[in-house]
Amino acid sequence: MSDSPYIINIDEADFEARVIQASHQQPVLVDFWADWCSPCRVIAPQLAMVIPEYEGRVLLAKIDADENMKLAGRYKLRGFPTIILFINGEEVDRFGGAKPAQGIREFLDQHVS
Image: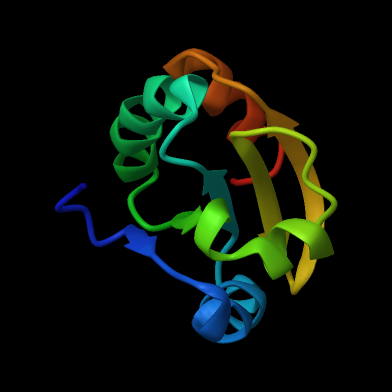
């Protein structure tokens, strides 16, 4: 995956601590992806390139949706990838599908200073 300290792989067991609780300290962008999803493979390197540019002002948490179906259901995911931004324990925004790096930056810049 990535050597970036700002990108982590998580699952349902650590979602509460590493996303909900952590988002009180810094925004957490959650990438719900699936192995079989070609747009997921398109956006993954874009996210891996953009997130380190924010130098810790946002954390990326990657979740395999197929292995964490309860979370996918909890957030009413309709397609993959679904990218959700959490701030102060709450979902503040989301987008679905692949975006180019500039689109990801524009999305983040609306919420992350």
